[in-house]
Image (cartoon, rainbow, N blue to C red; front, side, top):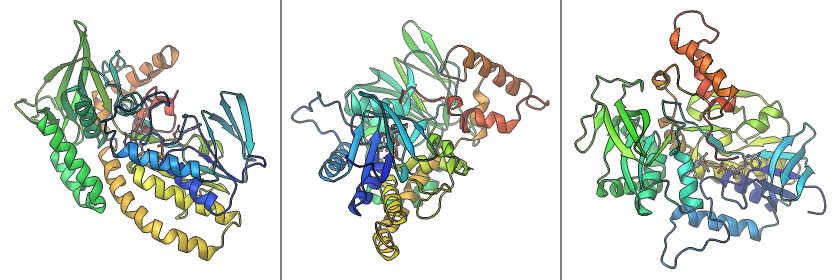
Length: 447
Ligand SMILES: Cc1cc2nc3c(=O)[nH]c(=O)nc-3n(C[C@H](O)[C@H](O)[C@H](O)COP(=O)(O)OP(=O)(O)OC[C@H]3O[C@@H](n4cnc5c(N)ncnc54)[C@H](O)[C@@H]3O)c2cc1C
């Protein structure tokens, strides 16, 4: 790009691509930056360029949507800077990145932050063992490397990624030892009305269930992974029933399918993939001192925004999961609105044109958000989930001091919940859901 960009979009997932395409359509000089080698983000990620699909392979709808978005981006005037990780954004909109050519900087007049989310894993005994990986991490192996996470995998946690990952493993020729779902069928039924806002996605989900049933995979509803242990080169997974609050309830029955007693069930596997939701990535908006609010149902702390996706910081816009977990379909549409709003504020289109262009997108975004928020609700952290942590559970995936410090802090919470301790219940909640991302069990996905 010869002149500095007018709009820089951070993140080339569906939200960023939507924003960049919409902004560039108005004539704004637009640059999109991502640390990944190409666009797609987490959901539409593709394989390395050297990989080839087998002639009869069917890589699935996510791959097809990603390819279509990549083609649109290529054909557009949007400038791209892939393989660049942004490490700083200053208040005068200087964007610093590091990439193959070393350090690079751009200046911009407006910034769309579409940085997505990171995975949340609530620590439990054994979660740091080799072979235990994030649920979302498994999607990366499956999509990007076309690799099974293990030969025999336990899929655990909550939310729609459980079924998505299980199906990808089955279709890839692997075995799913069990699905251990914190939610129960009633929880799923409760969100069904909101899921009908996107019948296509609902249909896809029902198709996944059929595949899982046909493969004979045991599904343990309202269960949690109590502990993972190493045993003779395998992983022993102990699953316990949970109550409505997702608190381990060893005397409870839970709801177990296909011959499982629902109490202290054990499974043997060589991989356990477990995830408890997503945390919006707010590093950039926090760096820029935009206002944030805590919304548990949106994944935690998010930038405060208006209906046009403006943050409280002038000329900074947010969209996609980074602005509140709402799924890929909503992300693309929110991105389009954010891109158009950035262009409006730079005088690239007038108010009437903005209103016309966003009216239809808003209606579609609304439906997609309804679906996405219903799914995000299934992943909302409940207090009982923290109760499974024993005093010596490692709460940080980082070794050394951080882990030791966390152990001390958790020990004080778990051992003396009623006495006055350095940490109150709000602090305990922040251990897994608050803004300091190093406490959120961040998986090693984006390093
Ligand atoms: C690991 C992971 C896997 C997931 N897999 C699936 C899945 O298989 N199916 C599904 O439906 N949903 C999946 N999700 C949820 C999914 O992220 C969203 O629903 C959807 O992708 C949101 O789109 P987005 O554009 O908001 O964010 P994303 O798709 O996450 O895109 C954000 C982009 O920003 C880039 N980025 C962030 N920070 C920086 C930085 N500092 N410098 C440079 N680039 C940066 C990232 O590389 C990423 O490409 C996954 C989430 C995670 C965290």
